[in-house]
Image (cartoon, rainbow, N blue to C red; front, side, top):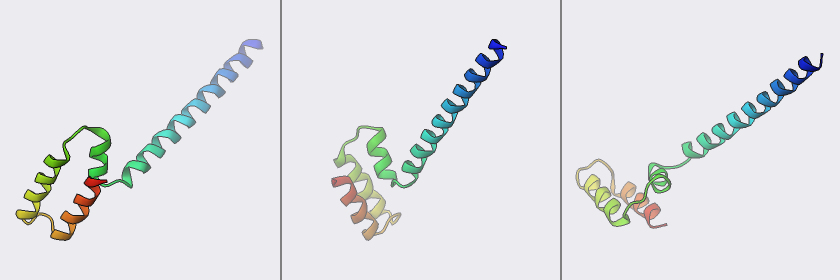
Length: 79
């Protein structure tokens, strides 16, 4: 009987841990979904702002992004 109670307690603890891990993963994913690609890049890697500005400039010159998009992304890089 004591063995069954022990196993039920262990099972309950495992369920609680799994629930907390799932919540943490969902919270992290929600945070990343709200971020722009530039913000995600800032958090994940070290990079030179000057290099990123050059990349954005090239995208603008190639017509991939507009002047307005360029200015918005540049502003976020400078934060």
